Image 1 (cartoon, rainbow, N blue to C red):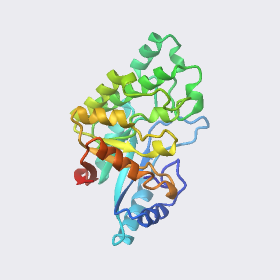
Image 2: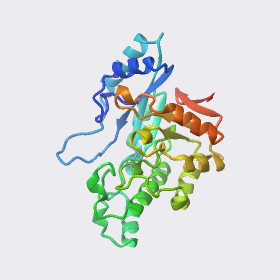
Image 3: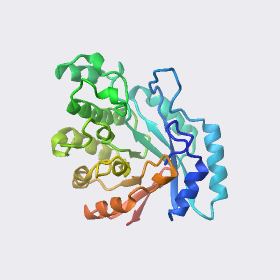
Image 4: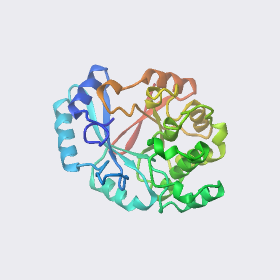
Length: 284
């Protein structure tokens, strides 16, 4: 979950802890957003973390509520291949329990394959500017299937460049913001590249996150959706982390029961919690 230490949340950390305890959670982990080089139209610095303030507040509240709930120390890296060394330095400098790797941005001059990809599909390379599919403008004038494939490719490229994290988040995040969201979106449609994504995650012994914010966004499914989770299991994937991606108290543990029912229905017997970067497999 996130708090006001992330640029996209205004929730005080203590409110997230109290909200979690009120919902009966026994363990939570804050994973504040760190996205180096996140683009801004007005030169505002976004998605940077004040680690001194974040760490001080987290451990102060961790101790305050130690008899109520376990609070773990984490971070979410918004990965880009050429920034691997910067993320590696952050991981080394802090005693995190849990590191999430994620893809938020597509395109940019650092992404050579992207230039070739968009040329092949018949529109100008400059149209695939460095940006976040969260922005409505990012989709204007571009085929949605091309954007989705380019997003999936970022996951493969990010893992090739940097592997020192524990789970890959919301691997189909991109379809939350597509013009028609997940209408017509299936594992089968993108099977070749999604198989490569899942095999890369499994090969590097990473976990896969099931992110229940997909329900909140009206997709009727988590991220990733059921057919991708099924394929992950078929390919031998076992490690699953569960997150609501909550940015405010009302989104804590959002539709966790649906996620549990989905995972057990697909044959998963365990979910994973990381402490001091070590996975602990817990039965449903």
